Length: 155
Image: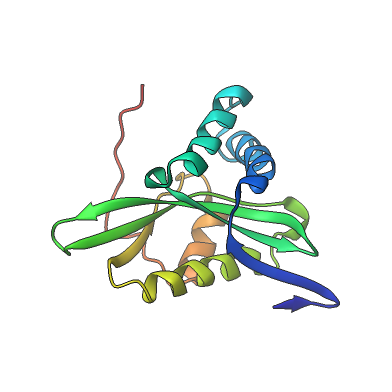
Protein backbone atom coordinates (compact mmCIF):
# COMPACT_ATOMS: atom_id res chain seq x y z
CA UNK A 1 0.00 0.00 0.00
CA UNK A 2 1.27 3.46 -0.67
CA UNK A 3 0.09 6.86 0.41
CA UNK A 4 1.33 9.37 -2.11
CA UNK A 5 5.07 8.79 -2.40
CA UNK A 6 5.25 7.16 1.05
CA UNK A 7 5.55 3.44 1.55
CA UNK A 8 3.28 1.69 4.08
CA UNK A 9 4.41 -1.75 5.21
CA UNK A 10 2.73 -4.25 7.56
CA UNK A 11 4.85 -6.89 9.26
CA UNK A 12 5.56 -8.96 12.34
CA UNK A 13 7.35 -6.90 14.95
CA UNK A 14 10.97 -7.54 15.85
CA UNK A 15 12.81 -6.74 19.06
CA UNK A 16 14.12 -3.44 17.67
CA UNK A 17 10.46 -2.28 17.51
CA UNK A 18 10.11 -2.64 21.29
CA UNK A 19 10.92 1.01 22.08
CA UNK A 20 8.14 2.26 19.79
CA UNK A 21 5.69 -0.33 21.13
CA UNK A 22 6.44 0.70 24.72
CA UNK A 23 5.77 4.35 23.87
CA UNK A 24 2.53 3.35 22.14
CA UNK A 25 1.38 1.32 25.17
CA UNK A 26 2.01 4.21 27.54
CA UNK A 27 0.25 6.70 25.25
CA UNK A 28 -2.71 4.39 24.60
CA UNK A 29 -3.36 3.64 28.28
CA UNK A 30 -3.43 7.34 29.08
CA UNK A 31 -5.53 8.26 26.07
CA UNK A 32 -8.13 5.51 26.19
CA UNK A 33 -8.47 4.70 29.89
CA UNK A 34 -6.79 7.62 31.67
CA UNK A 35 -4.27 5.17 33.16
CA UNK A 36 -0.63 6.10 33.73
CA UNK A 37 1.51 3.02 33.14
CA UNK A 38 4.74 2.40 35.01
CA UNK A 39 7.39 2.58 32.26
CA UNK A 40 9.65 -0.05 33.86
CA UNK A 41 6.82 -2.57 34.20
CA UNK A 42 5.55 -1.86 30.68
CA UNK A 43 9.07 -2.26 29.29
CA UNK A 44 9.43 -5.64 31.01
CA UNK A 45 5.99 -6.68 29.75
CA UNK A 46 6.69 -5.78 26.12
CA UNK A 47 10.11 -7.41 26.17
CA UNK A 48 8.66 -10.57 27.70
CA UNK A 49 6.55 -11.07 24.56
CA UNK A 50 9.74 -11.06 22.49
CA UNK A 51 11.46 -13.35 25.02
CA UNK A 52 8.59 -15.85 25.17
CA UNK A 53 6.34 -15.93 22.08
CA UNK A 54 3.79 -18.09 23.93
CA UNK A 55 2.66 -14.82 25.56
CA UNK A 56 1.70 -13.26 22.24
CA UNK A 57 2.99 -11.65 19.11
CA UNK A 58 3.28 -8.02 18.01
CA UNK A 59 2.57 -6.64 14.56
CA UNK A 60 3.46 -3.19 13.31
CA UNK A 61 2.82 -0.82 10.47
CA UNK A 62 5.66 1.34 9.28
CA UNK A 63 5.67 4.31 6.98
CA UNK A 64 8.97 5.21 5.33
CA UNK A 65 10.80 3.03 7.87
CA UNK A 66 9.14 4.58 10.96
CA UNK A 67 6.80 2.45 13.09
CA UNK A 68 3.45 4.28 13.21
CA UNK A 69 1.10 1.61 14.54
CA UNK A 70 1.20 -1.61 16.51
CA UNK A 71 -1.01 -4.28 17.94
CA UNK A 72 -0.54 -7.55 19.77
CA UNK A 73 -2.31 -10.87 19.50
CA UNK A 74 -2.60 -13.33 22.34
CA UNK A 75 -3.92 -16.87 22.15
CA UNK A 76 -7.00 -18.55 23.58
CA UNK A 77 -7.52 -22.28 23.18
CA UNK A 78 -11.10 -23.11 22.16
CA UNK A 79 -12.19 -26.64 22.92
CA UNK A 80 -15.49 -25.92 21.16
CA UNK A 81 -13.64 -25.18 17.94
CA UNK A 82 -10.57 -27.37 18.49
CA UNK A 83 -8.36 -24.46 17.61
CA UNK A 84 -6.98 -21.13 18.65
CA UNK A 85 -8.72 -17.78 18.81
CA UNK A 86 -6.45 -14.80 18.35
CA UNK A 87 -7.22 -11.90 20.68
CA UNK A 88 -6.21 -8.50 19.36
CA UNK A 89 -4.90 -6.23 22.09
CA UNK A 90 -3.04 -2.97 22.49
CA UNK A 91 -4.14 -1.34 19.24
CA UNK A 92 -2.39 1.97 18.64
CA UNK A 93 -1.96 4.31 15.69
CA UNK A 94 0.00 7.53 16.13
CA UNK A 95 -2.42 10.49 16.20
CA UNK A 96 -1.28 12.14 12.97
CA UNK A 97 -1.94 8.92 11.00
CA UNK A 98 -5.42 8.18 12.31
CA UNK A 99 -8.36 8.14 9.94
CA UNK A 100 -6.19 6.98 7.02
CA UNK A 101 -6.93 3.26 7.10
CA UNK A 102 -3.70 2.33 8.90
CA UNK A 103 -5.38 0.05 11.43
CA UNK A 104 -7.66 -1.40 8.75
CA UNK A 105 -4.57 -2.43 6.82
CA UNK A 106 -2.92 -3.91 9.90
CA UNK A 107 -6.09 -5.83 10.75
CA UNK A 108 -6.34 -7.12 7.15
CA UNK A 109 -2.72 -8.29 7.37
CA UNK A 110 -3.42 -10.20 10.61
CA UNK A 111 -6.73 -11.55 9.30
CA UNK A 112 -4.96 -12.88 6.21
CA UNK A 113 -2.41 -14.68 8.41
CA UNK A 114 -5.27 -16.17 10.44
CA UNK A 115 -7.11 -17.31 7.30
CA UNK A 116 -4.04 -19.22 6.14
CA UNK A 117 -3.32 -20.86 9.51
CA UNK A 118 -5.47 -23.99 9.92
CA UNK A 119 -5.17 -23.84 13.73
CA UNK A 120 -6.74 -20.36 13.98
CA UNK A 121 -10.53 -20.35 14.29
CA UNK A 122 -11.18 -16.62 14.63
CA UNK A 123 -10.20 -13.22 15.93
CA UNK A 124 -11.60 -11.39 18.94
CA UNK A 125 -10.91 -8.19 20.78
CA UNK A 126 -12.26 -6.20 23.65
CA UNK A 127 -12.73 -2.47 23.74
CA UNK A 128 -13.49 -0.01 26.52
CA UNK A 129 -17.19 0.89 26.38
CA UNK A 130 -16.25 4.58 26.32
CA UNK A 131 -14.06 4.18 23.24
CA UNK A 132 -16.81 4.68 20.69
CA UNK A 133 -14.38 5.73 17.96
CA UNK A 134 -12.64 2.36 18.09
CA UNK A 135 -15.97 0.54 18.20
CA UNK A 136 -17.00 2.21 14.93
CA UNK A 137 -13.73 1.16 13.30
CA UNK A 138 -14.14 -2.47 14.39
CA UNK A 139 -17.73 -2.53 13.14
CA UNK A 140 -16.62 -1.16 9.74
CA UNK A 141 -14.07 -3.99 9.57
CA UNK A 142 -16.86 -6.55 9.93
CA UNK A 143 -16.35 -7.42 13.58
CA UNK A 144 -19.43 -8.05 15.72
CA UNK A 145 -19.64 -6.66 19.25
CA UNK A 146 -23.10 -7.98 20.03
CA UNK A 147 -22.38 -11.51 21.21
CA UNK A 148 -20.29 -11.36 24.40
CA UNK A 149 -19.62 -9.09 27.33
CA UNK A 150 -16.20 -9.29 28.91
CA UNK A 151 -16.01 -9.49 32.70
CA UNK A 152 -12.75 -9.26 34.52
CA UNK A 153 -10.98 -9.38 37.82
CA UNK A 154 -7.65 -7.59 37.91
CA UNK A 155 -5.15 -7.55 40.73
